[in-house]
Amino acid sequence: MKVNILNNRLNFMLYFFLKPLVQVALKVYFRNIFLSGLKNLPHNKPYLIAMNHPTAFLEPVIMAANINKPIHFLGRGDHFNKPFHRFLLNQAKMIPVFRQKESGFGSLKNNYDTFSRCYEYISKGELVALFPEGRTEHEKRLRPLQRGVARIAFGTLTHFPHLDDLYIVPVGVSYADAMSFRTTAVLHIGEPMSVRNYFDDGISPDHQRLLTDLASRLNEYMVIIDKVEDEELIETCLTMARNTRNYTFFKVYHFDTSLLTMERNVAQFWNEEASQSLKDNTKLKIRSYLDLLEKHNLSEKVISSRITTSWVSFFPIFHLTSFIGTIFVFPMTYFADWVVKKKIKHLSFKSPVRFGAAFGVSLLYLIITIILSAYLSVLFIPTTLSLGLMAYFSLYFREKQAIKTGHNRFLKLDEAEKHKLLALKKDILNTFMFKLSE
Image (spheres, rainbow, N blue to C red):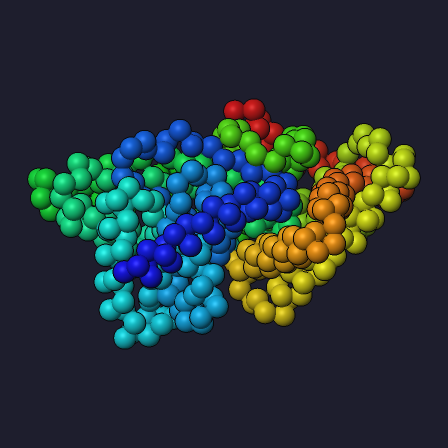
C-alpha cells in the first residue's frame, strides 16, 4: 500500500514537472492553437471528456497542458507491454484499454479493471478523457462511436449512486495539417451533457441515445469533409481561407472560435450547398493551380501581389543568430525526423512521434545543462537559455525568409505564368469568399 502511494505521488510530481515544459514545446511545435470553450468545463462536478481522435496523442497533450486538473487518458493496452513504454505511459497518467485486434481475446478481461479504475477516478473528482471512436485516423470525419464512453458514464453512476450526476464534455479536434510541423490545431470544448438525462424512466440507461447525441455534438465542433473524393477540393479551399488571415508569430494561443467558424462555413458550403457542377469545375481549377505551384516550387501563401519584407532580414546579426539557433536544435530535429522516417508507418502517428522524440531530446538538453552548470559554472544556464531563444528566433526568421524567397521566386516568373496563377487563385477564392465573413 505504501509503495502504491509513493508511486502515485511520484507520478503526480513528474506530471506537474513536465507540464510547463510541454506548454513551451507546444508553442514551438504549433504555429497556432485555437482552444475555445474552456468556460464549459464544469466546476465542482464530476465529468469526463470525450474527444475525436485524428492523431495518436497531440490532442491529449494540448488538453493536458491547458487544463488545471491532471487528466487520465485511455490508451491502447498493447502499448503497455514493454516496461519502458509502460513507465512513460504511467507518468502520463494513461490507463490501458484492451481490444481483441491488438491484444488478443484473452486480454479483454483486463478491461474490467480498466473500467473500475475509471469509475473510481471519476467518483473522486479526478478527470478521465477517452476517444469514443476507438481508434485514431488522420481524416476530417467522425467515425462511429464505440460503447465504451457510455459504459464508463453509466457504470460510474451505477457503482457510485451517491453522485447526483455525471457530465460528458465533448471536445471537437481539427488540424490544418496534422502531419506537419508548425501547423494549426483547432479544439473546441462543448457544453457538458448530463448523463442522468439518458436513464429511461430514471432506471434503464439508454446507451444508443447517449452515443447518438454525443456524435451529433462532436460533429458540430469539428471541421468535416463528408466525402473522400472532395478532400483535395476542401483542404485547398481551407488553406486559402486561412492564408487570408494574418496571425502574429509570437501569439500561438487564441481562445476564440473565429477559425473554427470560418473553416466550418467553408467546409459546409462544399459539403451541402455547392452544386456538383461547381464542385467539378472548381476541382479542375484547383488541380491546375496546385500543378503550377508544384512546377514552380511555390506555396499557396506566397501567391500575392504584395508581401511585406521583414525588417530583420536586413541585419546580418539576425542571420547569424538564426544560424546559431538552427545548429543548436539540429540534433533534436534530425533525431525526430529519423525516428519518424525509420520507425513510423501509420500517418496518424508521424506528427505525434516527431513531437515526442523532439521533446525527449529537449529534456536531455535540460538534464545536461543542469549537470554541466553544477560542475562547471552557473553561467552555463544563461548561455543555454540564450541558445534556446536563438533557436526559437530561428523559427521566426526562417519562416519570414521562406515567404520572402518564395514570393521573389513568384515575382520572377514570366507575366503569363503570374497572371495564370493569380487568376486561378482569384477564381477559386470567389467561389466561397462570401463564406469567410459569415
